Image (cartoon, rainbow, N blue to C red):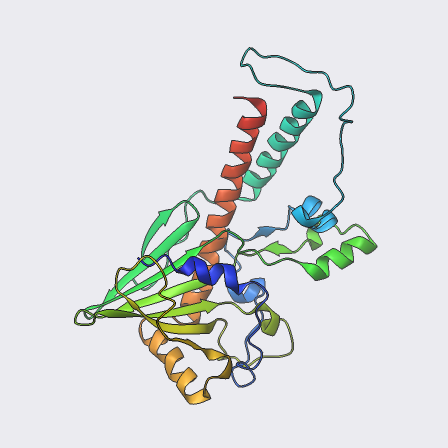
Length: 289
């Protein structure tokens, strides 16, 4: 499968397609829209302690539980450094892992309807489907797929919010759709995303699209890199009729609003699973287990 979808992930941040969706208004990416009420994959925004209060890794401020001066090294026989700060860090991680596992309703990933086969490799996943001789492959990565909550940051700066009012963590990844025909030498590739900027404003139509096409290109089948020499169609200034036909082309192959909803649910579950695994690995590293 083409791995050039990572190019789409890295270039997607902060890009808005406002000109495209005046005719196709996008519905808000709310919990009721993206996942069913019984979904176990949405969880409270429990990472607000760091991400919302200190703006994550971009913050200049770093809280210090212990002063770096006068730390007490402790040896466990492994040859690594252990300090009081490490012990406090390890205890914090243990509590954080317990809380995240309480929120995690299921250890299994939700199933995609429509006969999609899931192949997962760490944070990257492929959904594959064959229809009448055509192969449709959707690739996405859950890294950097959780949009920042700028409005919640401002609210928290004014006062601590209750746990019941914390926003949900929802993973809405960029994804690449590759359509391959048996007799064709090239695959038709769609770079798609969830435009949260447009989805967060105003009322929307019931039949509006919740995802958007950013770019379309022909790429050699089986190539691992995006060919910059191949013409790439950017949809920002695209004719409305052509754009609608492209969206219908995807819908006929199972990539529609239902698919986009289920993809968010799947990605959210994957992201949460990988986050817990990261915390466990970090805890083992800090504690030298």
